[in-house]
Length: 428
Image 1 (cartoon, rainbow, N blue to C red):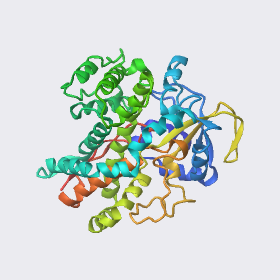
Image 2 (cartoon, rainbow, N blue to C red):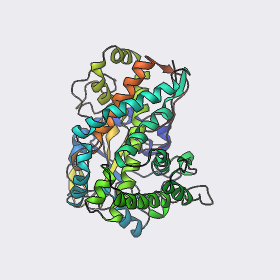
Image 3 (tube, rainbow, N blue to C red):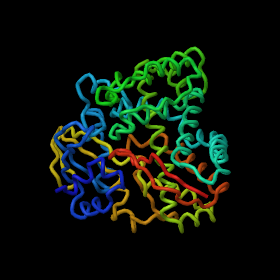
């Protein structure tokens, strides 16, 4: 018989929803609980980990990288398969601790300030309007597919990637984030039309599935040769023809080729996938709460707060892992050096100690200290950009389509990491 912690860890659980009732039951008595790693397909065996469920303790872990390290064993629950893969994974900013993490983050910071994002907002609004206009006369669409293009267009602009190559990022995200989902782990969308030499060379490097139909481990360079081949070519292009984009700034700032390639991996995957799931997640929240939907359509001043509530209520990124560097105490539990410590944002964002009536979707929620973008040194550098895109796309939907309705069943990603949506049919 499955225990509550088994339910939480099992990726199959998330094919229907986040198990909020289970999280709430565990949070009642414990801030931190021991969780076994699941014996399920696409999951390596492991020793288990401490699951951090309450808002305060999640913040405690996230703001203390000296005690709870990203670098020690990286940030996914399962360890990298070998020391070579660990060394490679540690090169990514996501898997580093200060001060090295701080150095790389400073190189990116200027591109993601509120002022920098404000300069992009007109273009983002135009792209969002064009996406909705394409389907407006159809009376229906798959909102997950429609929404996927906005972060791709935006990231291509910010990074200086040719717009015709942007669907490569969609494919890479599927393979990396969807590794627990057989549909994404065993097949790859061709994506880009190959209209640039960089894209054609990358597509030629695409790995083939193994005898069981699965792609190589995407946490290794060997598992993503097309991404790294593209990143290498992009770095060379930016050295020859620098622009005002993020990747040009990295090259002129003196990052190494390896640092550039790993930064491109992080930004093209993480920068795309979180919003790609946050947008249909926000639409699902509106569809599930039609009174709130009508309120925000009628009063657009509520939209910024509604976006924050979408992020809290849906929680696109459900968890991240740290590794304890010393023996310590957390939430009344004795944590030993080397233990895995996993913070569950999906639980912290429904913590009754912080959010009144936490299961209610409330577009007027005044105090919304949600954890959708993390906390501490690793707080998402693209948070302002993500929220600007959410405001733009929902504004376009409200302006052109008004109040839409479900037109079929939502199809969720099989993952206990990303709260993902593969299909969300809507009609109007």
